[in-house]
Image (cartoon, rainbow, N blue to C red; front, side, top):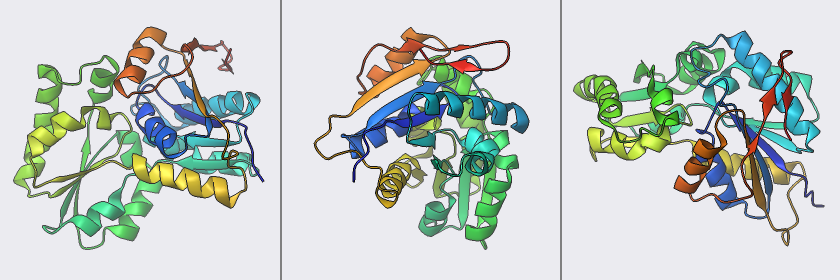
Length: 274
């Protein structure tokens, strides 16, 4: 059995493209539909209920485009909406993001792990459950990163301001002897080279995107909805932000596809994908 319908993927902006690139690499026969909500980025400072409303509207728009499963390539949206979405759409497979606490705990030798994420992620029940389950006996340093997503969305990957922000968060963690650092937002891998330059080779930086791609593959085969092995995959992208800025990010990640299309929100918070 095969299913050539597309996989729907969404994020608050360009960050989820880091996950999309991994999925595209692992599953080249799959058709992908990606939506980046540039009109509302960042999600992290927003209330959980507001992020939940956005997530439901985006899911409905992707399903209307024929999506066979939904990947929430955003930690804040996963924290706010993954469980409610699964309850509302029991026949749809969802894969969400969660901070890679387990592999970080397995790696640490100093017993100190740093996590960079949004306030929304840290406040979520999902994150609390993960820490309680996997991080017993380990010191967890929870570091919100206000302003970092905006820097990344603006293309400031290696600027002096971005470096100052990162040093302000990372150097105190280094003083506390972390040897594993979790990137708990899909935007953050876009500044991974700068992060690694600051923390040095003794700290392992962990990006959950490869694990998410593997989970998508497992779910496709579990549910019998993988594309035919002879299919030719493609990536179609939509944004409610700036299509030109979005395209530049795709090129940076080595992603190609048809022109990025402009999506619109109406006054009733309904999303239209052209």
